[in-house]
Image (cartoon, rainbow, N blue to C red):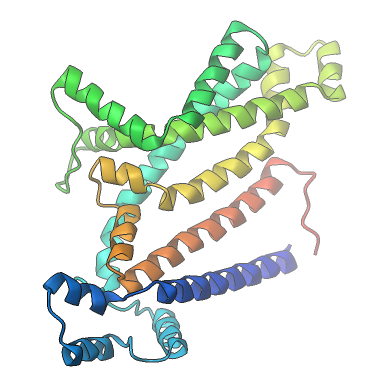
Length: 315
């Protein structure tokens, strides 16, 4: 197991290094930089002042030296400062991480709580009215754009309650904060729950056709024991995989939801930083998302061993 972990940590490091190079180079390939944007918005051009700003920000150096300066600072815990706000990158990013984490966590919990049980019900009641209804519901979840669903939710609240859920930075009681995050989380989690439900259904149907399931039934095992103890336990591995993928996706995939509900999270901030060519913010946010993705995939691999003792990672 130890050699496997060493290989995985090395692969994670290589992946993060590759991502850092790709995002750094791609940002520099986009025409214009923060100095151009600042001067265009101000409505005047002073070549000397513009050159001074580029020198102060290090944009006049070769791209290799800019990259080494960024990586070197990151290794020392210095992520640079925002070109727009002139504040530390950490001061800009850290307050937004808990906001997105709460929203993504609730959305993932909603998708699991709704998707897995409904997928099992759809499988064990195959070709019944309940199965047809759940399949149509899952197709609706996969078809509806999240921004449109979010707008429908806002219209519903305005129509029936005369108000809409508004995010506030002020400390809230636990239940008030839960409701504040639960509504946008349900909007974005509906699609994930539909995906998880369909995958759970197909995986359960495949397992229910296996010989050992028929053997368990012939020995007098109850339907509950067969469906949940024998079948679901062996059908859950593909579901765990897709849950891990969705967890990583939600960290950076909440752009539309955070915009519609006016939530100042990481995803919305990333789009704003891209528009302003705020290189340090964009680079560090993308690296944060990449780090979350590789860590989640590593955790999923470890869960395979816990859920299925037959899986062994060779030394």
